[in-house]
Image (cartoon, rainbow, N blue to C red; front, side, top):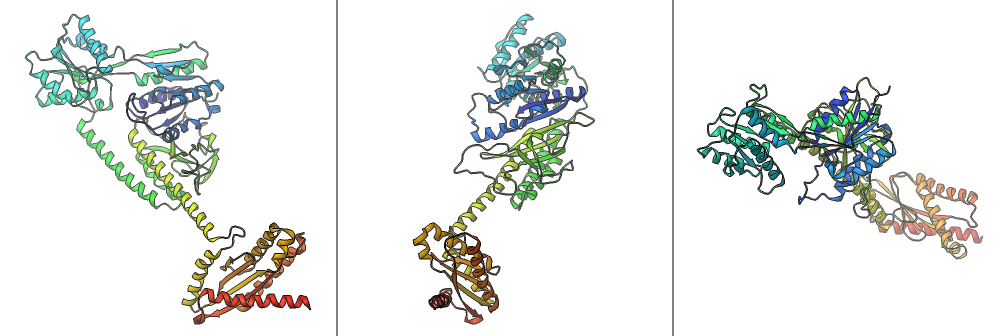
Length: 636
């Protein structure tokens, strides 16, 4: 039986919420021998009622990673709907899943319910922790620190606190309630509590951050935790796992929700009945700060913070080095070479940088002036870095394969994640990576991918600008009909040849050419026929002259060639090739008229080299002598 594949769609991949859910999904997939593909946009969605607004091109760049999903590969989908920065994504993924008959579960998103939903509930969380203190620790003097007065979370948690006290016939005393504003003010509230003659036996905080500030102030005042005062928190943030004493707290069961999501998908596969919505209750983490856990093998909080600070410093140093490498990159291979150190820093087992094939090694169509539409994922991608795999740099593959090599049929279930690379209104491609662990530093990883995106985008945009500048410059010095240089080009490049010849005592030759009988061709056959005569003469001159010659159309039917160092026999041979080329075209082109031109030349050696205009006039005189001789020959 082939191994099943589940995809997770998530935005804002941090350890406090999203990563914990995905970690639960991953562990259950490992137990059930299921491959897990994580499609992770990394930008955190602005909070509700926040003034922070994301630009449209950033939103489109982030969510484009979900267009990479190959539904033909999948057997199930989990989506963290409340993390999405655009709600339309939820319905698009759901619709695609339905079209492919793939079960999909929406996690913790009551506002966008799908056919199957898992909801994280914390309605009874505060009741659970207060009940625990009363019934298992026999405390009755319980103080409460909320966030801001009137805040929904504060009021809900305060209401639960009061409900449990009332249930246990403990009087509600307003002097035991304070507001720490979810931050440092909790320390001041704690100090005020401890000034009271009727000191608290326990302080219940409506957030872990406030609980940590409360414990810090208690320590400073000389109180022991939990011997003198019990402290509890709410949310289960990572800092709780590092602080001494370990904080007793309550949190939503993120990992359990991930596990339950996989089990729901498996039940659907196996034809079992599944509820439309399942609720996963919060979990009480009984630790040292309430006295339930006596010993701990965890590292001291300050040592952990020191280590964390060092990691941030290391990352900042690396990021500066990476940006320097980006700035000096001459091609796409050099552009991405610095990302290998980043893969090592984040402990990735494998890293693929898959760039849209339509932008590699050339200007990338970031048309920021004329075309504001978003340019998304291309049909093919190109692998641009080799780390943990043997795929050669520059290997092109269909993007629907996700990776440039087969990866789902191994002996063990796979964990592979995909995140977007984009710049302005263009999706550049994506990172595909195998993480060694799921928690990581979500903010640092997001900074890393943003740096890669912005620098790569600038590199490709600079390529485009250089292309456009070169194109504009070419239009400035080129004749639009023949693509030969115009007079401006002749001055720029002809003068350069002449200057070099003067310095090296070399030789300069000027050849002037004029189409024979162009006016009769125009008069009899029209100017389109005349243009054919001009372009064919230009081709003959360009293809017949020695390499390095400056070939110019100086007027309607007039041409000028400036070349350096050629012997007179070479000049004569070149003119003969022009005549022969036109003669061959006359014999095979099927035109009702003949194309011919007259060429004259002037050679100047060393110190006799003068101004270009003077030498051109002398060559022009020689050309008219040739033209006159032809007329005489025709009359005779």
